Length: 266
Picture (tube, rainbow, N blue to C red):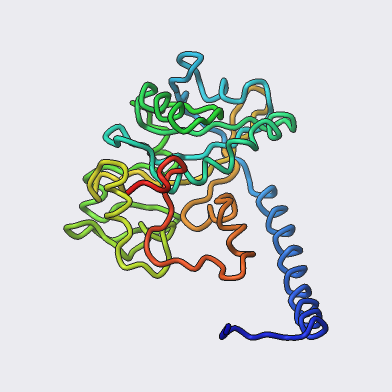
């Protein structure tokens, strides 16, 4: 017999209507936050960032592909990774089918990672994805948008991620500080398991970070308009939006997700 509260249909409807008031309030607040994102001031970019893509070497302006807006997902795939981050891979499963809709609404999209293009292309084929994916190898792009940090920054506590300063990484790297805000809540140390899934150790894995950045192109000038990190990415991690509506919610105990081609493997 279930230990969860049960009710008649009429009692359920009364409770559901009460919850609906809160959901509507949250929706209105989300709409207001979206407007505030759009009202943020723009910052003109001074650097000429270069990327390697399927079409060859391109500039950041080229990533707009004739559109006025560009969304970039900072995908954790460093040069030393053997495979892309499984968490980023799960997020990518969600946006892979969305790109065509964005492109037909004046918004270009590209994932960007530091791994060489050949690694990205091979992993993209393995996963069956079609979204644009650019390599920022040998570029300052990831560093400048706070999704890659040096060994020195990591060692000396000079990492500013998610708009706050992290302390020096212990040995092994930290498991409970801001570096893990985007990871599984309530887990003592998921980071080592996830690092192993990319073929790296904890320090190497955590020098790259996930994020989302938005840009706008006007009068041949590229402006940075918005960036979000850590749990600010929850809204674009599609599986969680569904789980939050499932009867048992996220119901997490350790690292349960895998790259989509790895479920069922021992």
